[in-house]
Structure formats: structure tokens, C-alpha cells
Length: 330
Image (cartoon, rainbow, N blue to C red; front, side, top):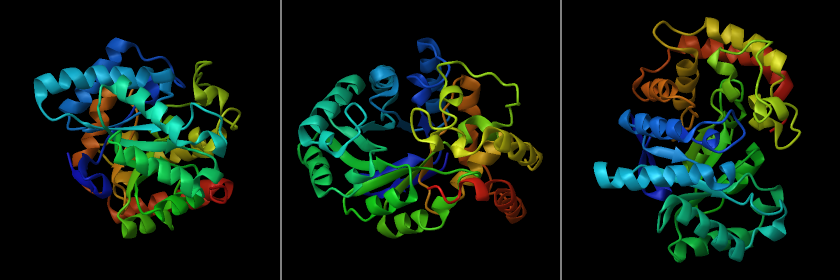
């Protein structure tokens, strides 16, 4: 498994991490027994970066990871790095992003995860006003000074938010949607992050599963699955679901994408390798709802680079099928 440095957090992490939204809610339910098996398999395969949030299942994801970490420390030595998030337990307005709330929310995460000091805490896709507020980032600095948090970053929806965050001197990481169908961060965000020593955590790398090549027009998603209820941004940013691409458009593009997959790789591995190959990406955080998925995702951490021919085909696919629909949005 390739490792890359998350510079300002003073950590080296696996280039393939594990996203754990699916351990909370927003997807088909993952049973506790399966959560543990997925975490065990990912760690066995060299994954040592886990991303979660305090609102995933109202803390369920954090608590299950915390249980895993406690047992991991007693049996295997150094534990994985865990990044969590805060900011969505209160109203999505600047007035809720206070030091007192940050202390309460981070203390709850510390308890859930069983950690005295959180490795990395990210502001969880907050509104634009938060990125412009000196007071918010001063409060995050206080969490570090008090020992509640080792380092902090932001999870963003737009490239403009990412650029504002990167300019903040103590921001260690930016988490942003990046995949074959969501390429805009390549233009300014990744170069700026490299220059500033800010890590890039790439999320939604499979466009909510479109790039797995498994979906069809008649695929049915559970009522609790965001791919059912948020296709048009009904409950949160549309970019979090299929990267903001219309489902029919995405299916057609995914069909072409699947035809480009090199021998010996799956569509998901092809998509993940593209992400890890982008200069400036620190780690990519695909989710997994089964042991087999966790194992398959981890293989990408030791794959050979994609050839230029493949990269050019993917650029052409994006320009022809996707760019006009989404490139102006973020």
C-alpha cells in the first residue's frame, strides 16, 4: 500500500482510505457484524486512514470505529488515523459555529471514538459564511491548543470554498468531491493545495457507485438511500449524489467508461486509480458495504499508473458527456 504524507497533520497515510458514511445512514443499512468485518479487512490490506463524521447515524459510525480502535490497539500496535467531522449537529448558519459548540461536538466525538485527542477534525460542508469567518478558524485553533484536536481541515462542496480554506494557514486538509465525472478541482484546487502543503482527501470517487458499472436504468435504491431521495438535491447538496450528474446521463457515460477498463482491473479500481494518480491527492476514501469491496478497493494502493492513452480517453469522455452539465456548478 502506497503511503503519502498529510503534512500539516504530521501523519503518513495510505493512499486508499475508507469512507464510513455507509456505517451510519444515507445508504442501505450495514449490520454491526459486517462493519467490523469491513474494518478488519481494510486494515489487513494496508488501509490506515478512516473517514467518518459525528452525524453519520447520529454517531453510530464513530462508535463502531471506536470499538474497532480499542481492540486494534490491544492486539496490533499502531492504530489507523481517523478523520471525523463536526458542524452539522447545529443550524447551518454562521451563528452556530462557535467555540462552545465546537468543544461540545468534539468532546462527543472523542467519547464515541475513545480518543483523548482527535487526529483530524473537519468542518463538515458548512455554509459559505463560515469559510470567511476568522472567528471560526480561531475557534478551531483553540481546539488544537486545548489538546482536543491534533489538526483540522474542511470538507467542502465547491472549488471556491476549497480555495478560501487553503489560504487559511492552519488548515491541514481539504476534503472535496473528485472523480472521473467531477474534474473541476484539477484546475485550481489541487495545484493550490500542493503549493500550500494542504492535504487533499478525495471523496465520492465512484460517483455514488455510477463508476462501479453495476447500475442500470431499473436499479432500485432503498428509501433510506440518498441515491433515491437526493438525486436533485432535495435534502443536501446535489453533488453528493452521483456527483450532480443526471442519472440517465451518468448511466450512459458509465457504460462507455466500463468499456475502457484495462484487463485485470474492475471498473471501481479503474476509477479509484484515476483519482490517486492526480497530482496533489493525499488519499481517496471509497466506502465499502462488504469485505469483498474493502479488499478490492485496497488493491488500488499498489496498482501501476494508468497509461496516458487511458487518461486521454477519460478526458474525452468527460468533455463529451459530462462537462456541459456540471462543470459550471462548483
